[in-house]
Length: 391
View 1 (cartoon, helix red, strand yellow):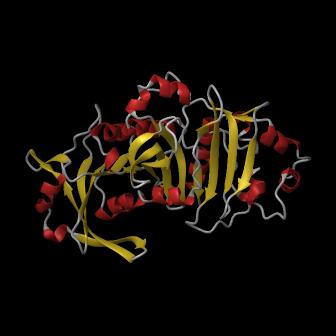
View 2 (cartoon, helix red, strand yellow):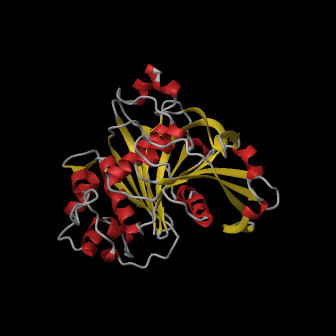
View 3 (tube, one colour):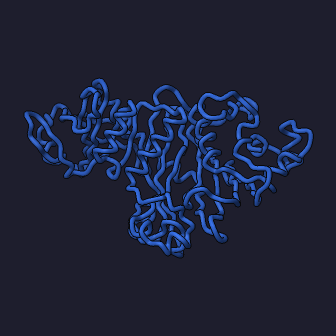
C-alpha cells in the first residue's frame, strides 16, 4: 500500500495500486482498508525499526523533546491547562514526549508517549471519561523519555548520543543514558549546579568566567531566516555526577554557547566515554533541532474519543521530508522487517492486523506524505499517533 501510494499513478485506489505493486487483485488492500484492526504500537515499532535501519550511518543521535496539540475540551486523555512551547504558553492541550532518530542521512520520529499530568492521573472522573487504563500512572517527562529510549534499544535501534533540552537534563535520565552505553549532550539551565576544579560547586553561569578567552571558538551552526548562524562555543571540564554503578567516570564537560551579538549564553551538560573535540559536541547540540523539523514537516492530528470504552480515532502520518532528494524507486527501498533482526518480507506489517476491524482510510498529503486514519481499539491512553520519515 505504501509503495503504491508513493508511485506516480493517474489515480490511487485499491485496483490501481494493487496492479502497480503486482497483486493479483485488490482484495488484500480492500481488507486492509475496510476490515483490519491495527495494533498501532506494534506497527509503529516495525516502521521505526525499518526507518532507523535505512537511516543508520553508524553515528546516530536520539533526540527527546515534546510537542502539544491544543484541545477545545478537557475530555481528551491528558488534556489540561499546561505550558507548551509548541503553543507558545499555557493552554488547554495534550502534550506528548517524542523520540527522533537523526543521522547524516535524515531523521525519523520513532516514538511518542502521552504525558498525563498529575492532576489528570489522580482524577478518577477524567480517567473514566477518557478511557485511561488503570495501569497507566503519572510519570514525569524525563521518565517517559527514559521509557522511549528503553523501547528503542529493545527494538535494536542503536545511537552514539542522546540530545535533549532543559526539561531532560536531570541526573536520573542522564544516568540511564550512560547505563545504556550512550553519550549525551543535554541542555541545562543557567542555575544548573555542577562541580568544577578542586571540588567547587558552581552554577553553569558562575562557571563561565573559568573558561579562558582563547578557549572560545566561533563556528557556523546552520542557516536561518536571518542568514548564517555563528555562535561562540567553549567547553569546560566538570566532575561527573551521574556515573552508574560499575561504570567508569568517562569524560564530562560543560558546553557553553554565546550569541555573537547579544552575548546571551546557553549551556549543555555533556558526557562521552572518551574525550571528543569541541566540534563533535557542537554537532550533537545542533542536531537536536532536527526534531523541530519533524514537527513542521508533520501534519499532526489529535487523537480523540469517539465512543464508549477504549475506542479512539488515531492518525498515523508518514511524511517524507526534504533533507535530501528521494531518488530511489519504491521497489529499491529496504523491506519492512519484523523487529530488529527479522527476515525481509513484503508483508512485514501483517502481524499488526486482525482479520476483522472497524476500518481505515488512506489520504495523500501535500508534499508526498501519506495519512492513515485508523479506527479501532487503542491499548493505551490517547496520544499523538505519528511517524515522520525524512530521507
